[in-house]
Image 1 (cartoon, helix red, strand yellow):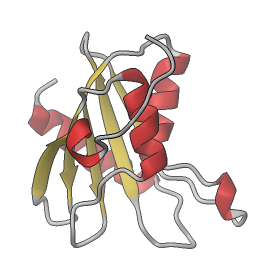
Image 2: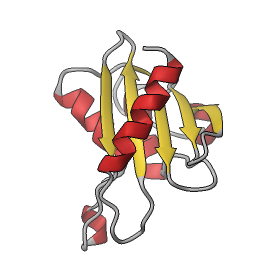
Image 3: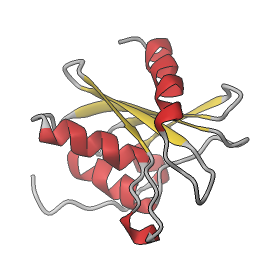
Amino acid sequence: MKERELIELARKVLKNSYSPYSKVEVAAVLLTKDGKVFTGANIENASYGLSICAERAAVFQAVTNGYRDFSKIVICSNLIKPILPCGACCQVLFEFSPQIKIITMNKNGIKETFNLKEVFPRGFRLTK
């Protein structure tokens, strides 16, 4: 899938966000190294610790389906500034693909691109 298509898919998935508490809608589209695509949206809960970010929702879906090597993740939100993955999401991404490319986009389509190691330089892995 081309980057433009991944971005369009992320915008579509954004409507699936369940964010009644923060009002921050986030969607993620994860691309595996062999071209498979997995999506996720943030899902909040009245017990905040039970909420899950869009990035982890996408990664967990991919791993559940047998995929563990990722090339890029597209993240979009309804915010004015492009949003980066939180520390928990960065660590989960690092566990599987420390070299992953992150494309993040705001509600107006302005995007920024990073490598995970730029935003999370001290991630760690106990395996591999």
